[in-house]
Image 1: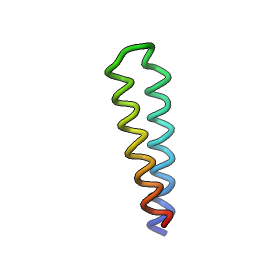
Image 2: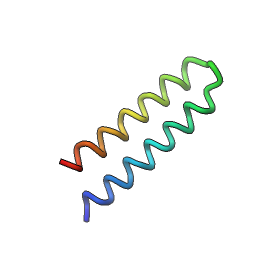
Image 3: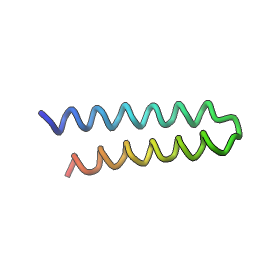
Length: 50
């Protein structure tokens, strides 16, 4: 059950990261922030699928 919640959380974090990237409009700070958020989300998903 805990793994499922972590995977769902990871997907939500990924989606919010993509949303931040879409809002960035060529600014470098939101771009870096969005990439960091996506990295955290994918780490959560990968670490809980193994």
